[in-house]
Length: 251
Image (cartoon, rainbow, N blue to C red):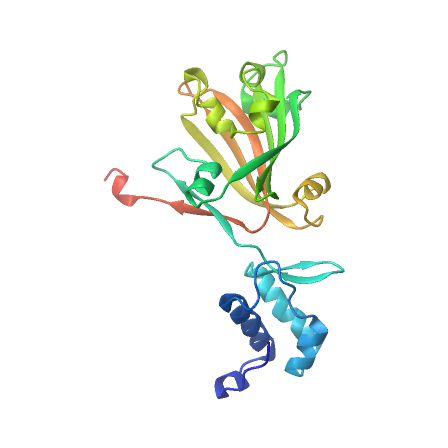
């Protein structure tokens, strides 16, 4: 990876030259997913600049999602961006989108069973204090690599229909849709960015304090009653695309 010598590059700030050089190497395949990017010291020497300038360039690439920095190890080319599409015209979910992209989703169960929960969970599920609640913690894996951590809650009437064996093989949505009274008719989603908690960071194999995408979601049956409420924490390479079809809206 060497500096370019065109006239336009000569007038470009050095940090942008470095950024573009690394970006071009990734685009051409010279640097592949998971490859170690040349160190700050090496790049500073190649471009005749300071390490602070290289750090500025790397920060730009981190913001773009092209590289990720691992403390004490170095900077690596980020994995391929994963995405799902929220289409208001259909009820879909993560596993469907990954399957359409040729990806195979597997699961690692962390916990499933009746659990004590806080009051706000019961409010989300619209159930009283006497009804049992099942909680689910489960990792989603792509090619054996963790991509998301599910933290979900459901009334006992729903949880009793599931099992550890089923949850280690199938999506919750597919399992619920097998029965008419637990079939999902509506998703209510909220998306936000948060800093990953320590326990979740361990499961997702990322540094504590890194950003994660959090999808809070409620599954509703045909009568509008909650079947499940929870949150899924996604590693930062995951993104969501929205489809809004103006032609389908009333005039």
